[in-house]
Image 1 (cartoon, rainbow, N blue to C red):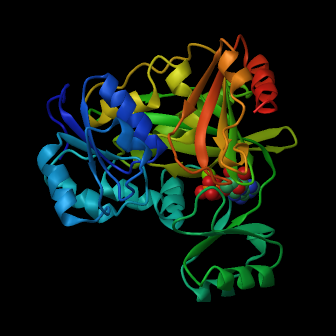
Image 2 (image 1 turned 45 degrees about the horizontal axis):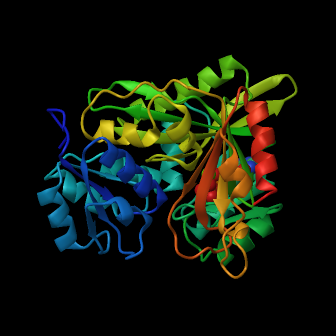
Length: 382
Ligand code: ADP
Ligand code: MG
């Protein structure tokens, strides 16, 4: 089902997943006057603080799914690894976005890359390894490369860098012989992402491109506007729209790109997609006319996408558990909190663990270089 009439406040909106993305979705929806039900098996789910109802059950729990279908006017997700079957079942009863089919594609790197190519868009050279027999192909076009599990990889998990064919075979066995892709390691000039919203009336809006810097496989900093030629930034936005259209996608779709530089040639390839708001789009809360979470609400409610204009250059910094003291003590927030052009967002997670996303902050300044310098200086004071 898709929403034929716009769904307006104070309707109840449902979300599968109650992590930080679900929390920021719930905050946006509540501010707009909607009510929110979160389905998440974790009693301490960050989104529960802002939800009217927290169904504390598994993502495929029948009673919980039935309650969602009966009580919500529309349903979305913040997490791609919910059961696509759950979304398909819900869709028989209530408008659901994104669709279970789009979720299933985004859950599987093999399908994801095939769809990107089918849309006429570039990926890194890759070989799908459905079974161990696929390792008998000539692997040399993909080496040195990265072996990535087809499913359940995130923040660099489920990935092994390999130099030779025998490395690749050993790594495939180490990953448990599950379906994988072997992807050629490319020389990256930088990484960027575009977040597109597509409504059920097929209107699209794309946020300004973010330039993303990673640390240990986890997003560290996003810089907006990206320090990229305007023509290239527009091309990335067009590619994101084209992919959303090829998937007949409804909702918020994040598209991650590699920017490659080979002499004078600069090229864009799509790395991966996320069928939801994205860590690299947190900046939209503080620096855009509409946030990515408001867009998610608008898309699921059958409203026109909101305007995506950038109100100020901005740099977002992720706060990982590593910034907390070994005894769990808080970082030193003083400098960050005293700065007049900085916004702190904490996700309300009880336990800080290394690598765990605990919050983020945004620095708004006259240009992205100044914002970056200040953001880095603040990092050193935490
Ligand atoms: P995840 O799902 O963990 O985000 P990605 O495929 O985005 O997985 O890989 C994580 C990071 O590893 C990327 O952001 C990029 O920095 C690096 N990386 C991944 N694939 C390649 C590649 N083919 N060439 C160079 N760097 C890569
Ligand atoms: Mg990634």
